[in-house]
Image (cartoon, rainbow, N blue to C red; front, top):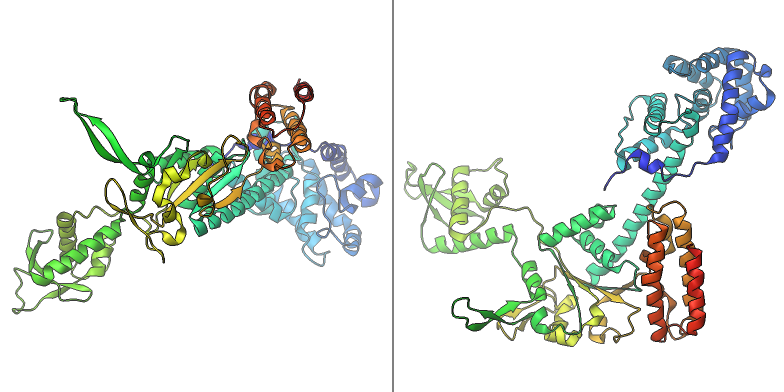
Amino acid sequence: MTKKTLKEYCNEIDVWNGWLNSYKQYVPKFIEEAKTKISWQDWDKDVFFEFFERSSHQCVSSLQQGYFTKKEKERIKSNWNKISPLLKIIAENQETPKWDVYNKLKAIIRTYTSQDRRAATNRLVASLQPNLISTIVNESDLGDLINKINTYTTSNISLDGGWFMCSYNICKLFQQVLEPDNNMDIITYPWQLLEHLREINSSLIEKQKGMESIIKLVEANKNLILTGAPGTGKTYKTAEIAVALIDGSNKLPSSRIDLMKRYKELINANQIAFTTFHQSLDYEEFVEGLKPEIDGNTKEITYQIKNGIFKAICERAKEKTSMDSLNDAIEKLKEECSENIIKVKTKSKTEFSVTYRGGKTFRVRSDNSEAEEGRDFPANIDAIKKMYQGNEADIYNITYVWGILQHLKEQYNVKDYIADSTDKKYILIIDEINRGNISKIFGELITLLEKDKRIGEENEITVTLPYSQETFGVPSNLFIIGTMNTADRSIGHIDYAIRRRFAFFSLKSDKNVISSYDKYDKGVKEKAESLFDKIKDFISNNINPDLNADDLMIGHSYFLCKSADDLKMRLEFEIIPLIEEYEKDGIIMLEKSAMKEEFEKWKNLLS
């Protein structure tokens, strides 16, 4: 997750002026009254009500159930002579926190309450310390803010020291970052930032839940097609799904930049492959075929069998893991030394004999052994595997185990261990899958896509490929994700052979994406939202009744423009031409003159 600065998040906040104005109206009065009045009865009646009597909708912090009860208020007021001197000290010290006084006030008030009213007590202090104490008086809320600041921003705050210290640190952090002329101008920011980050966190959780549902769908079917109108984010969603399948949806990067970076890493690691179907694509290009090669010297043309993108990724998905290679080598060594004595060397170059008589151990004997003739010693096969993975702790006869492992590496080409999962996933992304001639591209392999026909599954099927004559099957750890543009009327609907072998997930144009986009210049978001609504109504009201408006709505990505000029360009050169194509294809049922009038209204909306 890419972190933002605290200031960047604060710039996304619209200050609650009602709260701010109320705070600035009353807090200076609280300070003055606390400095000069000994008895609570001497306070200005309205000011005292706001300072002490009011629970909810108070100018510093709204408290309801956590505030003093009526009886507790009366007991506190009856002992105001003990509280008033402490309030006076706090009010007179606006630049230096008085930790001992804060805690003494807290202890005194606790003697008059039936339970610890920490938030209510904290509010009394916060009401007199605009330069030193934050307006978040609930301790769990303050802890939540600190955790979220540490998680989402580049700032870091300690949770040590109790509420007073943490509140002071928060207050000073915001002052340092925002540099206000008057500290009171930023008192709403801590609470507003907390709400903002909670919304972001909830959105991420919902996004993760949504992604988990899609991942379950893909894993259950192995094949998925994302459908949707232009601009609904299908191509980006394929990248998101691919990364989530490989890394886990709980590890999905939260920012687009980080996600695409990880996506490119996985492409470079050959775990993800991307292709676009088109009408001229065929089996020879997609699976395997003969490709001409010209000899540089003789200029003679020869034809070589070349793998297409589908066969290539299937082959990669079937590659053995490090442990698979070691296990194969161990089986070969078992077979070899069951019939013959194999000579192997230790790290110090001492030779020893290796035999295998069944079970979980090789039997070893050093050529320099002084043990009685015929006696040998065990080298545990599990210990060989353990050492291969880098763990040499508690290995019996470690010298011999090391020698056997080196022999396996040298004689059976076992590569150094690479931590891996036996179900390493590979993804083939097919953009515009409905634009290709499916029968022509997949040929007889179409059946092999089904989950239960994959290699290792219950009804596994393999075929002999026509050029290489190799036996071929589709591995179960290969996932295929396609996209389909539902607005493309120039081609037929998806082939039934594909439809019955793929799950489908529809992406709709979503105004919430426009509303949550945070890179608009001032005033552009409102124009983008208004334009989206106008176009949505236009399509819904004028679409061919035999068609589904959701399949043809202009996607939200068309409206994600930083500036008004960019949005105008997008409307003029992308959105309007697309709708004109809709009219030509019989999707929009409206006279051209009426349609052009509507276009002018949209342009005027952005002027």
